[in-house]
Image (cartoon, rainbow, N blue to C red; front, side, top):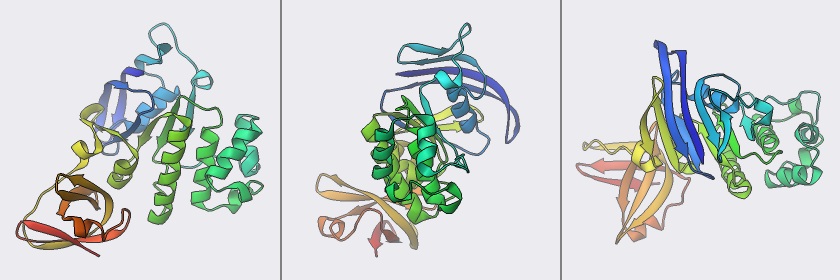
Length: 283
């Protein structure tokens, strides 16, 4: 269990504001922090990591990381941090970047194999693509087998195809290593696919806290339209099926029958069409 009770004065997108967050996170959860720019998401991540100071308490598995009397430095907190800009050592190979964190060669080899980087282990970062660099950064963050993995919009600079591939890698590593993962993201499809909980911040305070479906799902509009989106999931509900679709920054659900559900695959692009009150999907 992670227990956070934190306060900090800071400058947000609309001027001065007060970060005031009380949050409990279960072990092994995958939590997405979302909200508008300047709402305090990255600051909260950095406070957990010990990269910024704040008032209040951080307790992880009954161990005090921070309170009025104690402050555990970053290097003693059992965290892994994945930044937006990769933060790799330019003069070290892929493998050396991992071994710099820990000299566990067996773990490094395992991580490289899981993320399909084995053949690139002797390459320098400048010779890699953005997606490859982010996979290296992800592997490096797990070299100490951290209790908590913190990620600050790790896939924001990548195209959709590479984002989908890395989302699979992130979920696979999260499950195998049993970490508690906290990720800042603005992408609803990414949040829906990865997280089991969404915490929505606004002006430094928690405005919504629930499952991705509870927080993100929006169903509105009744006039005729046709919109392109990504099929995130197909859920069975009694005798019907429900398709969960990401359209821009919104997530909607569309009812399908069994025959329709079998013609679609999760991850594919679809068109959401409607006449009056009956939306349907097409390829």
